[in-house]
Length: 188
Image 1: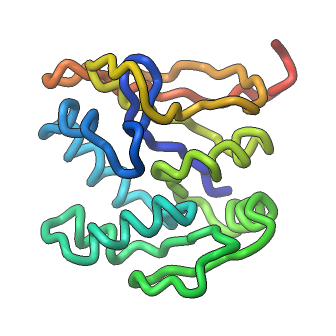
Image 2 (image 1 turned 180 degrees about the vertical axis):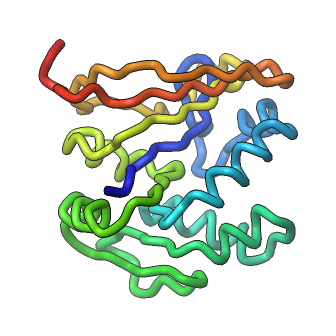
Image 3 (image 1 turned 45 degrees about the horizontal axis):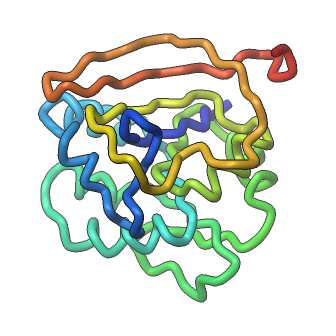
């Protein structure tokens, strides 16, 4: 069975972007050779990349014009975008899914044994958290307190107990934490 993995970078106080869409300045603080290597490893293991509409639009705009190994992988890997409002999804290897995000992800998880990554996509991620679909959470903590922005884990998320499986300190001062979901999500 495929694993559904959340990959996000947040500030120390829990924001994944600033007060505006695509204010990702905390990413610049944590970025370096170690995260680049991790990014390439993750993309090489990915069967699919999953996005909500807002993240998809920003990623497509950036990566279709970018160059380098990460750009090549981002453009090559099959992508799923979940949106009820998008009319088309023109980024290379993208499938637009309009309904039943959790049911579709459950089905795709059962059809293989690779990794499925959700990047950004906070609204879609809330749905997957609440439906207990994430198998692993990979969170990069940028060494900055921003004081405001958009929280990754906002209101309305169900409680989930997790098991820490690894930590990686980065030379930029950040850290990458990897958590697995516990087998019984109701044990609090």
